[in-house]
Length: 532
Image (cartoon, rainbow, N blue to C red):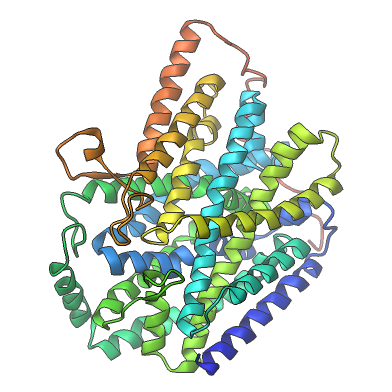
C-alpha cells in the first residue's frame, strides 16, 4: 500500500464527510419535512443547480466504467458521446414541463405524476418499484468504482468499502439532499484539476496522441472478433441503440428527477440544462483514459474474485503515470465522484417508497414528519440492496450494471415521458406493456453469455438477434428491445381497449387543463421577497 496515496484519499474523504454532516446547517430548515430533506425546499438557484444536477448525473460510470469499456471492447465504448448529445434536446422537451407540473401540484416523484395523470395507483406502484430496482445497480456501479480504487491502492478486504458505505449512509440520513449538493462543489473542483492535468500530462509521457491511437488500433487488430478500434457490422446497431436508449433513460431515473426538482423555478431549470453539456465535454476527455491505458500497457488488477477487473484500469493508469501525491488526488476524485450520485440515488429511491408505497398503501394518513423519517430509513436499505447487486451479479464490465438499470427504467417511458403530452394511453395497456418490457429486458440480459468469465448468463447489455433463430451477428441494447415491446403493447392495447370501450373514461380523472404547461403562470414560481 502506498502510504501517500492512502493518506490523501483518507483526508479528502474525511473532509467531504464532515461537509456532508454540516450540510444540514446550510440553508437551514426542518429535516422533518420531506420537501426539505429530499428536495431542499425546491430552492436551489442556477449556479447551485448546475453543480447539483451535474454531480447527480456524472458518476463512477463516467470516471471508471466508460474508459474500462473502451479499454476492453474498443470503439463501442464511445457510444457515451452521441448519447449525451441526443440527451439534452430531449431534456428540454421533458424536464421543463415536468418541473412545472410537479411544482404546481406538489409532486415529489414521477410516480406521483403517473398516479394523478392516469388515475391509477397500480401504475404508480409499478413506476415506483421500477425506479427503486433500476437505481440499485446504478448505486452498485458507484460502489464498484470505490472498490477499484481500494484494490489499486493495495487495500484488500471488504472493510474499507463498508466504512465508506456507512459514512455515506450516515450523512445522507442526517442532511438529506443538501449533503451531496454541497459536496458537489468540492467534487467538481477536484475533477477539473485532475482532468485538466491528466489530458496533457499523460499523453506527453506516452509519446503523444499519434502514438496513443496507433497503439489503440494495433491492439484491437490483434484481438478476437467482437472487439475493434472501429465499429463492425455486428455492433453498429448496438452502438446506435445504446446511444438512443441511454438518452431516453437518463432523465427517467429517480435521482435525475430529484436533482431537477430541487431547482427554484423554470428559468433555473433552463439555465442549468443549457450549461450541462460542459460535463459532456469532460466525459469525452475521460473516455480517452481507456485509450491511454492500452498505449501505456496497463493491465487490469485482480478483483475480489481473483480474475482481472477492468474497473481497475483507470486507477492503475493514474498510479503508473502520476507521482504519488497527484495519484492520491485522482483517487479521491473517483471516490468522491461515486459518493455524491450514490447519495442522490438513495434519497430518490426512498422518496418513491415513501410517497407511492408507504403512504399510498400502508399509512395513507402519514404526516410530513413521518414520511421524512421513513424516507431516511429506506435510503439506508436501498444501499444494502445495491450491495446485493455486486454480490449476486458479476458482469463482464461494470458499465453493464448501469445499462441494466437503464433497461429497467426505460419501461416507464410510456407512462412518464409520453404521459406528459397525452393521456390517450389506457392504464391497463400501460401496465401490460410495462410488465412485458421488464420481462424482455431481464430475459435478454440473462441469456447473454459472459465471454470474459466463460459463464452462460448475465454477460452484458448487448443481445444478439441470433437468439431468434436468425443467421446474423447483429446485436441490440436490451433496453431498446424491451421498450419497443412495451410501446407496441401499450399503443396496440390502448387502441383495442378503446375500440371495445373497456374502461373508457376511467383514466380521465383530471379536467382537460389540469396538465397544461404552466410556463407563464405565477403559480409555478415561488414568491420572491427582498433579501432572498
